[in-house]
Length: 208
Image 1 (cartoon, one colour):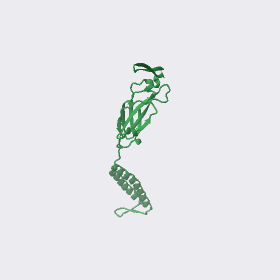
Image 2: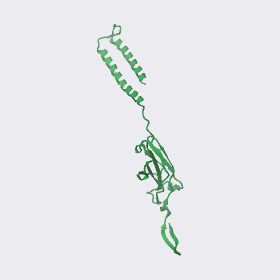
Image 3: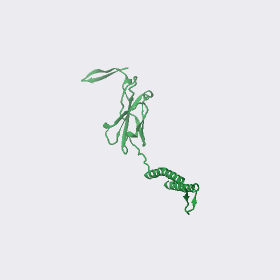
Image 4: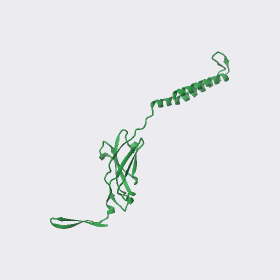
């Protein structure tokens, strides 16, 4: 450790004042604020990155960060704070924590982790701010949605009609052609089935 004293001349007399009899620089660290803070917002999350400057490598590995963010129009006094659990210089905010069509501002500060015994520091000053806004979720076209709904309803309805025709022709003793000629169910039903299937295919093509 070090012995730090303060000397001064007061009223023409020199005086020495003892301030820190055993001063340890490792226990009194204040780092520079993080730099280059940037944000990238999507519809599902917002990623915020930053960097640190003038920090030895052995300290960079044991730093902890605190994120503060708020709605852009609000005061920092009502901002939300998050103490990050690792020394990574990035963090993600889930979209569920952000309001749509609202701009946000965020900033970061750092210090040596409280779990570290060899060093101790106070929080740095806050970094500059970054502004971001959650991206809108793309909406499905109502026209496409209506067409898909009609297709899903049309398919089971068509099979129901086919089953009805099959059952009806099976129970009937005979089926008649358009010209009034009598034909067996075995010959008439395939013709009806093919005609109806062709109608289904044409209708599905129109819906697409």
